[in-house]
Structure formats: structure tokens, C-alpha cells
Image (cartoon, rainbow, N blue to C red; front, side, top):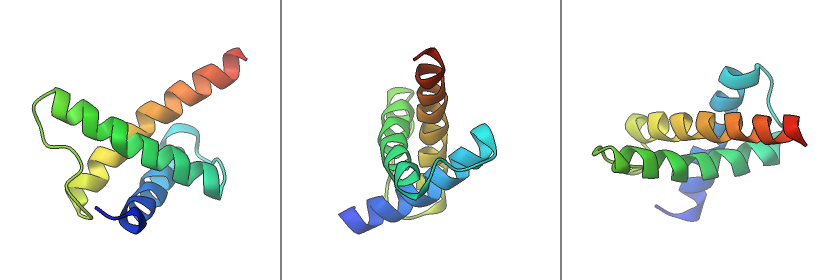
Length: 83
């Protein structure tokens, strides 16, 4: 996947993940960053449990990225709350 596809997938996954976790976005750039990191974390988690990771711009990859984004956002909020 190219960098533009990662950014698009990250933006969408970060936005959806932010709406699920805290009902408001973290901001445009932070949503992209957390979404791209979430896509990578989701890909790692899914491949660790025997499923496919992010495979391109499709619905399955979006679900993987959103799951990873939710995990990253929950960890982000826990760390932010502690500090």
C-alpha cells in the first residue's frame, strides 16, 4: 500500500475509532497519526491471532484498522489520564 492509501485509511480509521472511544475526534492530524498507528497495530493483532492484516483499501482492512485504532486510542487515553 502506498503512503497516500495509508493516510486515507488512517484518517478514516482514526475518525471512526475516535467517535467510538470518546465521541469526539482528537483533531485532524492526531486522528491521522493514531489511525495509521492503529492500522499497523490492528494488522499485527489480526496476524498474531491467525487472520490477515491490512490488505489494501477495502472494508476488511478498514475494520482491522478501526479495531487497532480503538486499541491505540484506549491506551492513549489511559496514558494521558495518568500523566
